[in-house]
Amino acid sequence: MKAYNKINEAVLVSLQAIVGEKNVVTDADKLVTYSQDEVTDSRYQHLPEAAVFPETAEQVAEIIKLANRELIPVTPRGAGTGLAAGAAPIYGGIVLGLEKMNKILEVNAENMYMVVEAGVKTQDVQTAAKEAGLLYAGDPSSGDNCFIGGNIATNAGGNKAIKYGTTRQQVYAIEIVTPTGEITELGGLLNKSTSGYSLEQLVIGSEGTLGIITKATLKLIPLPQYKMDLLAVFPDAEAAIDTVFKLLKAGVDPTSLEYMDNGAVKICARYLKESLPHQQDGNYLIITIETNDEDALDDKAVQIDEICNANGAIATLVPDSKKIWAARKAFGDAVREESYIHSSEDMVVPVKHLPHAMKEIAAICAKHSAVGRTVAHAGDGNIHLNILQGDIPAEAWPTKIDEILEELLAFTYRIGGKMSGEHGIGSKRAKWMHKFADPVQLKMMQAIKKAVDPNLILNPGTVFLME
Ligand SMILES: Cc1cc2nc3c(=O)[nH]c(=O)nc-3n(C[C@H](O)[C@H](O)[C@H](O)COP(=O)(O)OP(=O)(O)OC[C@H]3O[C@@H](n4cnc5c(N)ncnc54)[C@H](O)[C@@H]3O)c2cc1C
Image 1 (cartoon, rainbow, N blue to C red):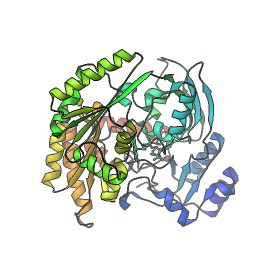
Image 2: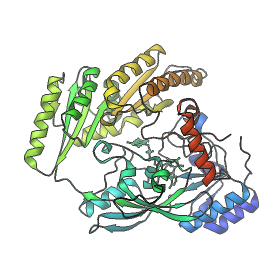
Image 3: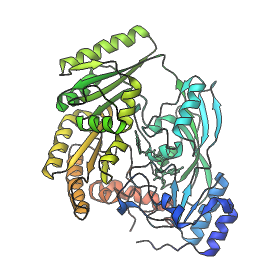
Image 4: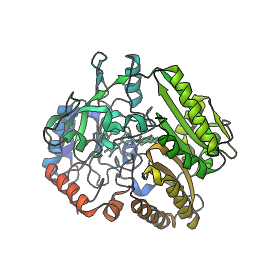
């Protein structure tokens, strides 16, 4: 394991000189907040020695230079909504929070872009775009809390990725502070570029290991004029999942194509104290369509209705959109209410293998007598399986969940999938990278890390281990 130094009094004084006393937190009670993200398992929580809150990229750069001189690890943190323990400082040191860099710097409706600091909430980006008559297409379910910098660092997906792509497709350029403390802008206001390596794309999704994102220039697109949500209810989970590929093949071009199994529907209804359509036995496909032509929207709705009914749906409704999306977005909280300790998984598989994958996942959970709740960004083949600790005794849980995960991931890789579609590897999945990632590719990733971060200062232990 890499040996880092502890933060001593002199380092604290230097940090205070860079960001001001009010922006350095060392009080143990307050540091607890920065020891974890949304991963509830205490094995993935680690107390930092200090949390610092810079207000400019120059301050970030000074902190990073100091950390290199003193050999102190730095963990960048957005809103802490991550589901991979990527913002948990596993070697202690400094948590560098971006929450004070929260300004929308420019909304340029004429040229369809927006410039924001990294700590702006995603929802505020969406709202500002809408107020300018445009769309920011990134839409993670955590949008009312997470930060745009966190979305870029994790290449967040979400509910509209099937149509508009993940966060990397929404970004023109990012300003970063490198792991050695230089400030640079990667990318540009360009629609194409083959001018050396696409460094912005390398940093996007690197989970704070290759640079600290301080500013981003985001793409805005025209707002579609017409939109409709449909809810197809299937008594049979397999039939629901089988329908996903059929809808895609038929060219319905959904903006969202989300799946909730009946267990998920039930717990979300209970959590929200709402009654949801067919909640007793329904498995859901939530399908959103958008067009610029009202007749075309109706035609698509009819086509979807026909495909779903032909494949076993008992109803295809125009639901109360607010209620249905609230239910879908409540999944994480509903699972947490059911079993505080759980393992939140994020496998992605080729869409054509989704039916097979869902069956195998259910079989693996059943074999281990574990309860799993499942939703999916089904159109992307991205499965959110939450495995509950439930009745599994606390002392047996770490071994049991590792056994289950090893089987699940082995299966996922066998069918051409990967362990994370959007939440990232974080520190939670790093050990599985060493088991399942292609060794040549892992070596390339480690070589890149070492080349740009020779002291291994930035978020060590996230994505993979370096020892
Ligand atoms: C209820 C719920 C729903 C969710 N739904 C979705 C979803 O639909 N799609 C999806 O993709 N994710 C989803 N997530 C996961 C999470 O919200 C995303 O990963 C989000 O992008 C994290 O943003 P954050 O600001 O909270 O980052 P954090 O959790 O603070 O950090 C995440 C990672 O990014 C790094 N990081 C953060 N900011 C920076 C920065 N400025 N520069 C460099 N590195 C940085 C951290 O070091 C860490 O490795 C959900 C989470 C919850 C709790």
